[in-house]
Image 1 (tube, rainbow, N blue to C red):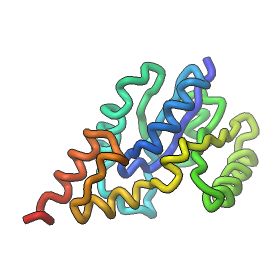
Image 2: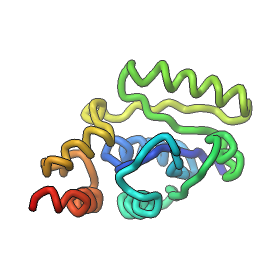
Image 3: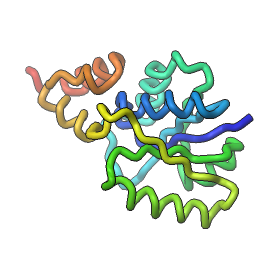
Image 4: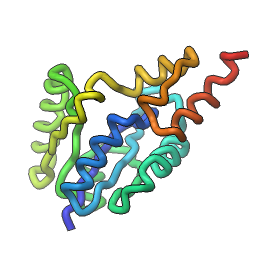
Length: 162
């Protein structure tokens, strides 16, 4: 079985993420979408909420599994017997950081390959920070996130309406 991991914060999951996951699920036997615990970030959603939102958003993909990890991505890849790490590239600005990470991961684990996938061009400008900012001001985010995420964002920011 050729398994890959797709790590990220997913705070929240967007249609850009779903697009990358869909592409990866067509290329590999199993995609493990894994929520990274990043102590340098202050996420809007808890780990449990992000896992739940991902599971609901990805329930139509039978070869996609959702989990979380704390530590190095390459160690998690080894733990789940993955052959690679999926990374999304939206624009040239993503490349330098992702290239550095891919080289470091290769140094740490030569047997794990980084695979770069580009989302559909309609998602190249999209990221979770933009979605959170829009939701903060009660903007319509239905074009950017699954319905379950839209509902969760509305709930997080409902007091702002009042």
